[in-house]
Image (cartoon, rainbow, N blue to C red; front, side, top):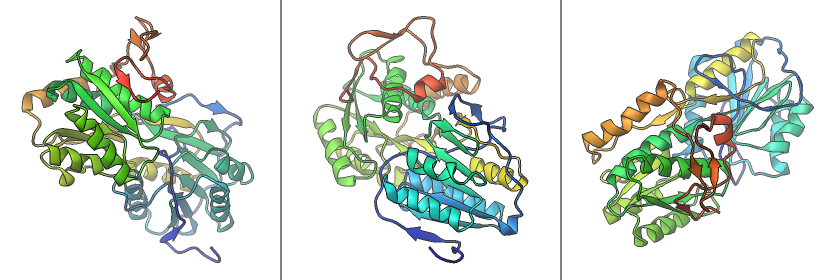
Length: 376
């Protein structure tokens, strides 16, 4: 990248993980989170819209139909809201020194804000520490400095709601889960589905298969097929593409997806999806950066404001939709369903009775609940 970067795209091969990051948690729609702070947040000078350059670093291709596609909708929303500023993005940034090089290039080209749509850890931290005049946001991050913040979506609530529908719709009492890596976002998704399902059907079990990728249609197809052949009649997961939904459609079973509305790939099988929407959040962070009021902070995007369940599929009976949505209404009203006692897969009490897992704890979830197999 030399000279002035165009308002368009720049390509770098590869990908890996899921995330995005944050800025000021000043909106009432954002839920403050704890974070490991290593420096006091500071205000950065305001920037005229016509002089602004906002850079986005994506973990995957914007055509993946899933995670990165959802973030790209946020990029497009920023362009529409601020037509005089310039945006640039790089797709499929690898988790290597190449990431550091790309983030440095953003700074060198004059970006006043850099948004990474995944957790790049030290690769972005090394750059942000050397560019204190630039605002950095990292999705699924864990560290807050004077100019680096993070944010994440509380997807576990939508997964819990969908789990209720799964528990009511399964006939075999076996839910299949296609996972990527054994990391907290995957544990939280799988655990939430089963905990929700067991509130209406205590006999349900969840079997997971990890494919070590976020975007691998062939591997996801194989995993979905294996789960179906093992008796799972409801598939869910945390993939960036619709491969296992196609398996469910072909086999006459049900499936719930992640990131976006994917029902076109399996209209008879589609139940719902954990829907992501970063548009309002992106717009607010950019507005604050332009105004000089942005501050680095950790925050969660709560149910109804950045993440939600999708409109129910046509095969979901109205009474099941109502029962699941009754929990959605409670959560929107402030209820937290992740209450003890909760046991792990070995039967040990991890969350005692009278204790509630807050978002900070769920964000770090690294163990499977009782009834979940295949993640440990």
